[in-house]
Length: 303
Image (cartoon, rainbow, N blue to C red; front, side, top):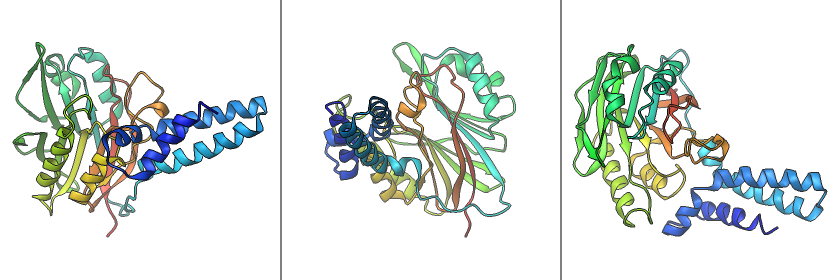
């Protein structure tokens, strides 16, 4: 029973909607807590421990309800016959020099648009090999981090407008001339939550990002990247309220890549404007990063 106590506390933290930093930190783990509680319940059933079975089922139910918005967001129905755009978005990790794994991961995903954040020098130098079918490319300025270079790269099968950033916000945007019409693609890489950074920095960044998105209210838009937060916790709720965008499913989780994905956190997210919807979402093949890539199939929402 003691094993279940922290798990149900995590589920209740997520259900509470409370934005306090400690409660929000616990809420990030509701999906793996549901999986863990379900596994413990199976163990109790094998041991025929009636009381723990009931407690485990209750705990698994609470955590599953709490995490359900991550797996089943309120997406619109797709428009029949509308074209699809395959998006590959990934935090490559600045120290990742396994360009073979990156190449194979992108090739298997067969993307039309790629969003790469924390792309290191090795990945940038090998870009022609990594994305030979995506000739239209934009790169942000190189940022030095402990002797390594990192940048954001947006690449597309179709013509791509110039890259633009926002002062003080870790985002880059470019407009893709896609079969869905002009598609404004925005990359994002928020800082880690408190206590790893100052308490309000992640909140400041998401509010600034929301304001930048709201400045183009009529754009057909997709925002993709590493939010360092699940979609239904404090950061996701603020972003949804400030933009009206809808998240793609974010279960199973993408980080850390070393864990089985049902035990990971869904912090690498994709958000779409209301005229779009997500036909399918899956995790891509591991690419040498500590994050799994996310493959999202976008299409037009039914009016």
